[in-house]
Image (cartoon, rainbow, N blue to C red; front, side, top):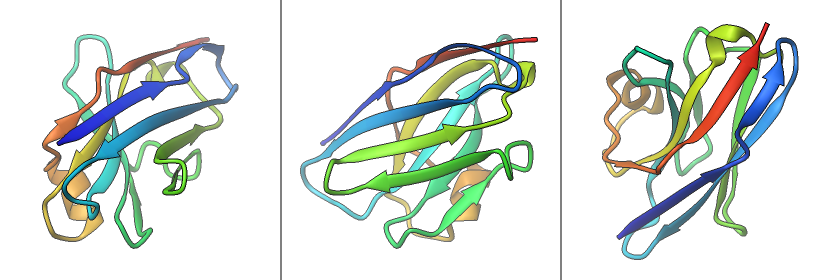
Length: 126
């Protein structure tokens, strides 16, 4: 059983920062790869960043150097630090978990994640 709950979304001006959090609960397995996805208005959901159980990370090209994914297992919390935000970062952001095995970059690229939270909205105004 997997529970994911995001928080930290909001409105920010271009160039600003936000930190998203995701409280997670796994009851039967603790080797999930965790990730963040987003869905811009009128577009499909896309992978943003991922981190596997060994701490290896992967990022979409559009956020490399601006976003940082991390997690604190002692707090069961996943984070996404977003800096230098621009209008193209606007969208609904989802916390996700994958039980699939494989390279974290591959999982993010193929969007092989079976669990998603309800999402938190991020609006960046220019």
